[in-house]
Image (cartoon, rainbow, N blue to C red; front, side, top):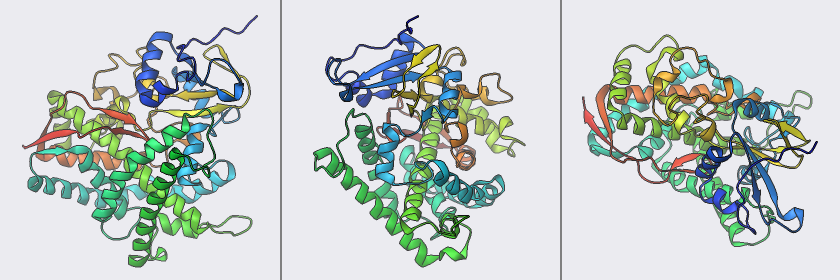
Length: 448
């Protein structure tokens, strides 16, 4: 019996769906999920001609298929187009490494992210949250909260994982604010190409990619140099101390200076962009829903709940990440023929899972477009992979608990002092290296 074809849009005769996926991947995936269902195929490149000029991308949205894609590394390899582009930008680190290299890095860094260690970081997080509240009184009532929380998350990283000066300086914060969108665009543009020219070729896109890469590494070199002068790695158990103390079990070999640099860059970038995205969307959504905001503010004014599953403040952050997941798309390459959602996905295909879409799946989320933090209070009856803002499988984000604690601390501090009013009817976002606002997110802060 012939395999049942996977449905999907026809696309342009020459480009396929490349332009739509580059221009607005989230709207493209969600719209075609609504038209075609849980599994959709997209052609990249010409409909006819040499096979090497076109690529097949299969998007799967049912939680069971998502779980298989993220958990079965023997069939679904992470070495797909997006990861290759990320590796070209950031080198080999905990996000881009695989196999034994990844296991060695994960073992080295896991102790930094235990619940006990993160509890030790909470004092620095609270101090920075109080600083945000204090600065608001001076800065005025209407604030771009995306910029506000980006400064907060970078300062927290400076005081916890890097243990250098009390904060990353204003120049570093401004550099990241400028470079992060450029990084995301460079990676996304390169990831969707059917044929990626070697970076050594002096094409305009390659020159932009290289320029962004060099500027990014110049920033991290400045941070590491400042950290080393103010607090040598032997002085504490921060990220750099652990990286420089790691040894291969058999050879005793240490991380090279390049490996330490790559890891530091990824933690600086991923460690602030994910939390910035979560906090920005949480503040915006609370500012659009005053009744929900008051319930969360009442919880913020009292002692924290005994567990995250009972805490309305944590629930508000988690619901914000349902609607605006920081990691909204993940890609895999199919190594051998596989069955997904009852359809054959041939070896060589690329598979995409999208939290943006699955988090809106009407089979698992009632009124999926509505903001309702009560979904995350108490035990959930939904499948495990109906919600995966931090990825899944063994590669679940190592900083998940860090991000939730950091977000809840700032949210609590702000809601104790202010009522929020989001001034924009929509939150415009773009999928770059992570989900980011594509413009200012204006929120008015009124003292309680």
